[in-house]
Length: 209
Image (cartoon, rainbow, N blue to C red; front, side, top):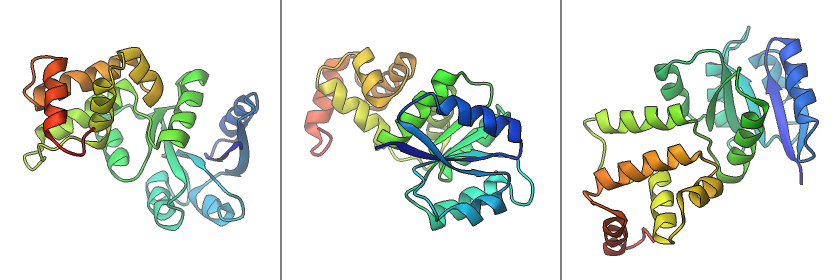
């Protein structure tokens, strides 16, 4: 089964480039193209859309408003934000408000394909910077619970299964560096000194593994 994709961007040349690039991969199929948020909402619903590549800046209805409406009307469609804004506050906003990934338009073809597959199969794709921004926000938040995030629990389970950093990265569609970031964060959060301490922490808490 192919991954059905919608592209929403007000630059036709950019849409065409993405469409042609995705066409080189047999598991991708572009089924919807739109030049604005309004245009997008008019076209969605006629085709099954698994993945939406959504530009942040568009006329008539920008990506922010479009994201809100799409998450409400089409909750099964995963949204990957496309932007030129490499700002922490923008990234944090979209990731906390329903986006499954926040991608810069100058990324490589390989990274875009990896991101699409990761979101389709596991629900989220985080670049190294996105992972850092989310971790920093969690640390800074005065109301943040000590409980581990869903992604941290995934990493912890795989650590307890004796998976290597490379194996965890491949299974969760993350970079090895991002996995190491999660590993260090787990050690800090659980007050563990080593991997054995992490395993002991998991065993003492039912439901983690």
